[in-house]
Length: 188
Image (cartoon, rainbow, N blue to C red; front, side, top):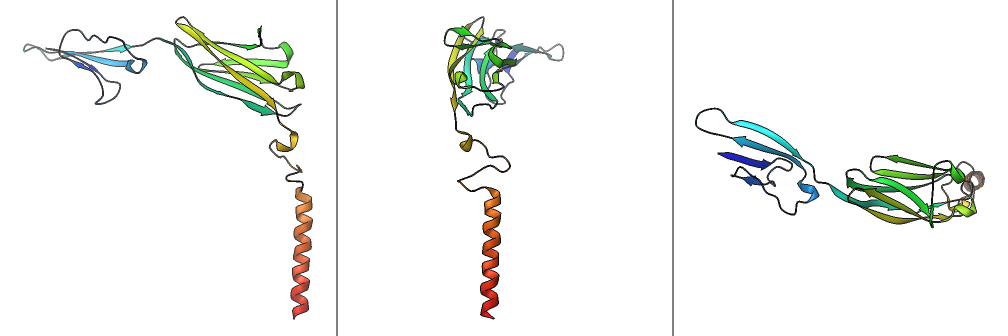
């Protein structure tokens, strides 16, 4: 008896009692390890494992627009799933971007590609296209770098929030404490 079974997800695999396991229209989630077991009445079972890799074209699994103030650092990120891994390219309109040109850096690490602007200027705002390609196909997505005002950016030390900075709040607390103390003192 020869048994083939899919080991990837316990209880959700394929089992075949034949010497062949045919999977027509295979899906990427059927990648994984398969076990082949040969059993007869003469010897102990012979068990071998076979790893099956399903190749598929890229699809963009994560991309997010980003808002940044002029003069700040901005990072656009694009994540693509693919087997074999995707190669990335970035475009602005019809122009392919490259590291070092116009103060940008492109980094590709596995499934993720980032486009970094070290000092965002007005001319940097707009739509960018991330293209992910492998031998089975390609896909792309548009990501926007948009302007936000400095007051809506993450507040740092001494930043103005809702028109009141931390020093003003401290003075207001001190004044309120003094007023309450005076009111308490006058009562007694």
